Length: 590
Image (cartoon, rainbow, N blue to C red; front, side):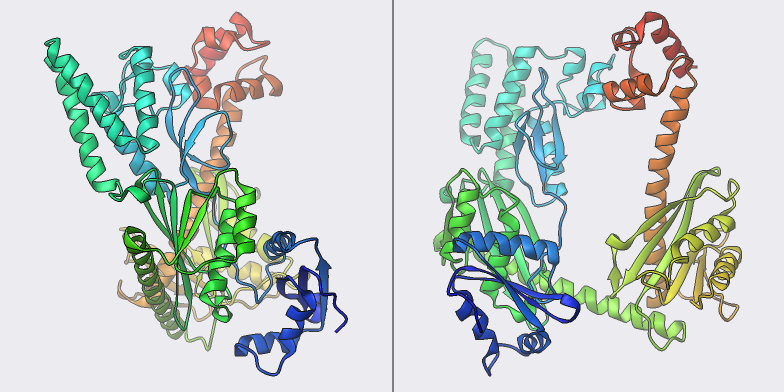
């Protein structure tokens, strides 16, 4: 095999140049040659090698450069035999805005330098729980700027003592800024300093005989002490930004559990289930996760692991971020306790996943028996959503491989149906979805599920007949009470109706798919209705063209902001003026 003894990346290609595997090597010739020995580490690798048609290589200047190129190719090509982690939404953060009266809020996305961010958090619940905790002690505002600037009286949060109401000047600017500084101290892990400061302020208020103020500081001390007892890590060595990463594998799957500790606060954990990890060792799964995760998300001060990752991977990740990070393998003491906890989390997540898969398979088999089908894999479900016939949206959600497939969902804005005509709306959606089947590489479902009764199922069958497609159609219709569990199943192929027990597994599967289609249709309808509502409302105002309309919506961040604005606020916008501002205000508040 004519390959160089140099670092680089190799790509194993099958028929039609399908990428089977991407790997990196310090020595390309030695690494690639190892795949063609008689004995393979696993049957799956042997199967992969038998499919190789040819191999492509790219030489790099260093192993670190090869590592980055390997990661980029895996993310782009998603090879069949590489360990893959599903692309997840960006992690949530807690955001403290740069504002004269800073706002505490939930943030998901890429942090910028304009505001202060704390995190990342493993999931949104951890952020929202932290905001509730901070509101009890520090009482910063959580409302957006539009609500803040246009309030005339304090909101409910002030009444339940979870906001200091800076919107109506219930607190001075100096006192509010002190609360902001205290919040930052808490989030940076200086809770002991904060408790000492609170105690000094309580003592000073007592000496001045201001017992009401002293009582407020006492209540804050009690709340902060209670929070410390439930959320803070007791060991000092863990009072930094720390991630604990554990890998647990069984015969069926691999789970990577990530525990996040930020400034001494345990924020929670998150489990990941890589694809194609059955051919990999736990160390390979660990390194794949570290690369996938820390190329995007900042390194903490410390990462605790069971086994040490490669020096090349560690040095590369440390080069990407300005802070120093220690990778601790085989930890002892409190660090070992946290690692064991992460491993236990991974074991529980694996068990839960196996139980969910077993339940899903049982539901699948029950539905197959109920419909008298030899086998099926893919169900596509349609639902219609509108408001009194306005902004009609059809959804198409996909169930395949014994789970929902959100990346394959579709929405259709309905244009041909009369307002409220669900049957015609179903016809348009079915036609637009399946008109290209056979012409393009479109997947065809084994079953089409319709959220509706006889009329909707007949409409779907008529369009399928026009398209010369023979796909079974099943309807699920609620009765007059519209209670869950009281639906009728309509088998259009056999012209039958079924009433099944509420606990029937196949029936529960149909219900869950239908509910997902309804959710997806409703969310799409709300988005479209909001857009058309904004446009139509502002179009009522004479002399307001598209540019002025866009300027208003951009400045006030939507129609609600425009509605809340005063005449003076509107007049301050370029090209509006006082006369036009008064007309806009009158139209919006008729």
